Structures are given as structure tokens and as C-alpha cells.
Image (cartoon, rainbow, N blue to C red; front, top):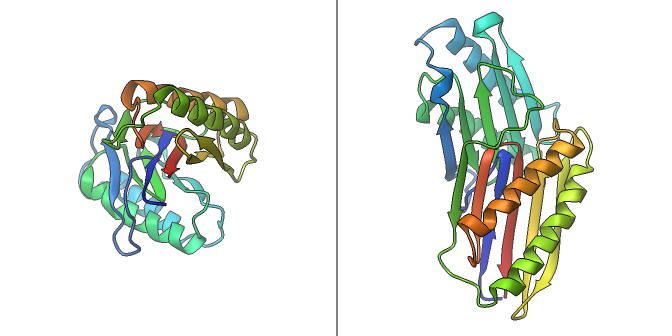
Length: 243
């Protein structure tokens, strides 16, 4: 078991790769949504945003890793979604979200909308409703520089597994849409994969989002042993090779 590679894919989103420490998670990607405009320092919008981010972190009643909150009124209303990877413990989830809350306002100061993604969690806020929406832009990709030798055989195994897990994750409930699995690949390799949607998506929307994320792999990461793809904030796909 000499080495492994991994990839993530998200749709309202999650992805890149890293070793995540409990003290300081490594940033995978971030997007400052310039089209939503800026807020003024010390404004009502900023106060509402800070209140909302603190509320997510301090909420100990939710133990399934998905938060969708809003706070404020009219043009100062702020919406936020946070999602933790399905295998993350509640305490580790809250720690990741707490770090994300600080990172997102540092990376995108005074922005009315932003997204950050880490290995174990992702966070998005906006000045418009974002609950239950499928959005596939902006997107991000990161990949391993090493190639597989049998590209066709590897892709056949990978996409067969992702198709299966897409259906399983999409069939989840309003708390968790998450699936994991493995499949044999050429050259005595085993591919392990994870798929996840934000559970506010319908079954069909989750499936659609994961399908489109998988379709990006041949364009960005063909023949690569690993990589990460992010498309806004609604899904996560991860794979790794053990050989």
C-alpha cells in the first residue's frame, strides 16, 4: 500500500485536497462573489453576517453536519449554508465551520457573498436566498500530476463507481445525502470514492449536480491519479487510489 491519491467534487460545493489539522485546516478553494456587491464596514449587513456565522458554530443541536440559516430583514438579510463531510464527527465539524467563518470574512472582506472550502467542511453566505438551488458556477479544479497507465480501464472503473454512488447519495434524506464505496481498477488498484450533496437538494437535483461534476473529470483531470473539482456549493465527490 505504497501511496494514494484523492479527488473531491462539489456543486453548491466542496473540493481540493489537503491534510487537515485540527488547529488550522488548509484551504482548498475560495470564491468572492463580486456580482453581489459589497457591504459597508460596521453596517447592519455586517452585523447580521457576524451574528449568523456565530450562530452556526454555536449550534450544538444539529449533529448531522448541515446548517442552513438566515438572519435579518429586507436588503440586510443574510443567508448561510454550511456542510461537513458525511464522516466528520460533530465536534470536528463545528471546529472546521468555526475556522471557515473566520477565513471567509478575511479572504473576502466586505463581500456580500462568498464561499470557502476545506477538506472536511465548506461554508457559503449570500445576500440572496441560496437554499435548495442548484448552481454549477463558479468551479475549481486541482489534480495530481501523476498519470494512470491504463486510462480507459481506470475511467471505466471510476465512472462505474461514481454512477452507483451518485444514485445512493441522491436517495438520502433531508439530513444526509452521502455515500461511499470502492471498486477494483487495473494494475491491482482499488478506487475508493465518496459522494455527497447538501441535503436541501431534491433527489433529482442532487443527481443532476453530481452527474455534471463527474462530467468535468475527463476535461480537467484525464488520466490523473487524483484531483478535486468544485462547482459552487452543493456537492462533494472524492476518490483515491490504493495500490
